[in-house]
Length: 254
Image 1 (cartoon, rainbow, N blue to C red):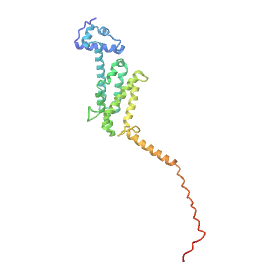
Image 2 (spheres, rainbow, N blue to C red; image 1 turned 90 degrees about the vertical axis):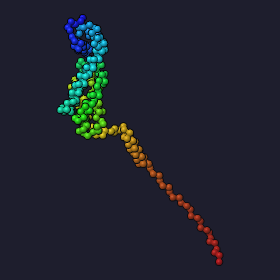
Image 3 (cartoon, rainbow, N blue to C red; image 1 turned 180 degrees about the vertical axis):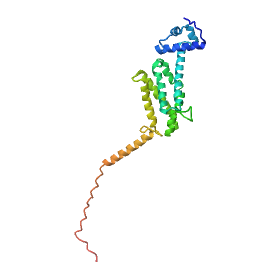
């Protein structure tokens, strides 16, 4: 049934987004129809098609908006240069984990789009590339410990990725609440950052480590072999018979 209240095109669009978001979050994408969206908004089906082309278009707009809001929350958390670095990491973890509980978890596309929706911006903020003079949380930790600047974007990506994948696991196994999980993530990230080596290496699996291990193993085996080998006894001297003296001496010639 058509709604008698007059709205501008923008107002109607926002109304449909609100209605669609509530329905998708409560029932899931597959269970919601265009008819149900139109009925809840008190408009005709053609209005929904006019604004979004169908429920797929409406859903895409909703998920993109959720991602923008999440990204903005992360940007705000990571851009606060007055906050303690650990507080920034805590805010970022809580913001990311929000995606996996509450209404947002009923938007399956939201999880998949987190990896596609401006991830570089989040990582750049964590790495400090948005404000080189002041730097982000990872950048400040690197500067303080005099670590290699080349590793900064990778460390930032690790912090974001660690939280995202943990959130995906937690969404299906919610044994702890969001704050407790965020505490686990922050504890691992914070103490890991505080103990970074200035020049990290693979201690066992690098080519150099393997070559050194092979050399040490060879030296050890050579030493063991030399210690267990019994030297040969020297040969006893061979006794030779003295020649028999002649029975007589030849007469000397006068």
